[in-house]
Image 1 (cartoon, rainbow, N blue to C red):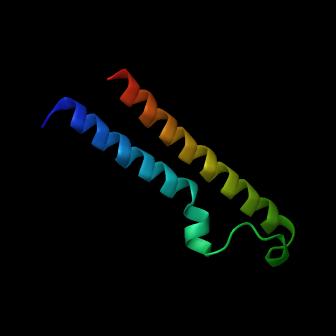
Image 2 (image 1 turned 90 degrees about the horizontal axis):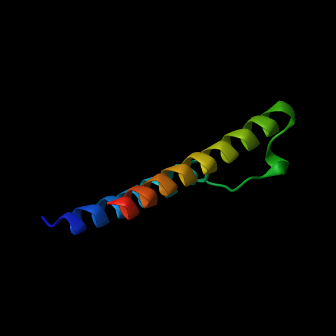
Length: 71
């Protein structure tokens, strides 16, 4: 395969993986962030988990785009 095609395929796969990581709490629970369904410390834990998964997903997408633009 051509090197450009391989890099493009890796870019698409990396973006998809990053989006799946970012939206994994929504995929697992089936709902967006809902304050009415959680209470107390669980509310804080859910907020931290959702925020960290979005950050990790965006870092994966960023690294993929950075690698694609370099090569």
